[in-house]
Amino acid sequence: QDQTDVVQEVVHQLHLDDKPLLTALNKIDRLPNSEALGELLRLPGAVPISAAHGQGLPALLAAIEQRLSAAASDAPPHR
Image 1 (cartoon, rainbow, N blue to C red):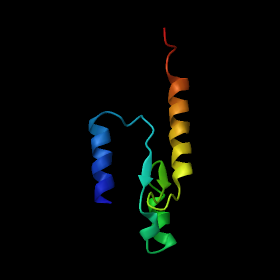
Image 2 (image 1 turned 90 degrees about the horizontal axis):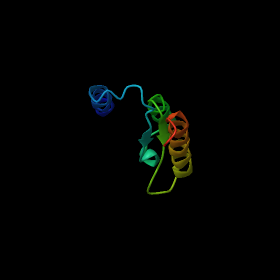
Image 3 (image 1 turned 90 degrees about the vertical axis):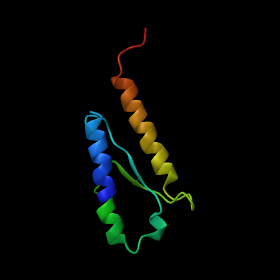
Image 4 (image 1 turned 180 degrees about the vertical axis):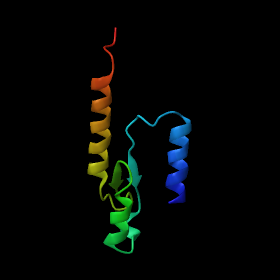
């Protein structure tokens, strides 16, 4: 929890509160139970992954793509 509080504070200090947040939750294979994962999934933009096992990587890539597509469609036209 402390680490997420620090991240939220830095996001606020940088005035990025209005930007979509993506939180990659690595090492989910080490969680003791599904309850622990459920608590973590309450974080903004949470995507559970295990980089070592390749678990959740397609979902992470899809989430990144979705956010980039949304940002591109919100951007003013390039001249």
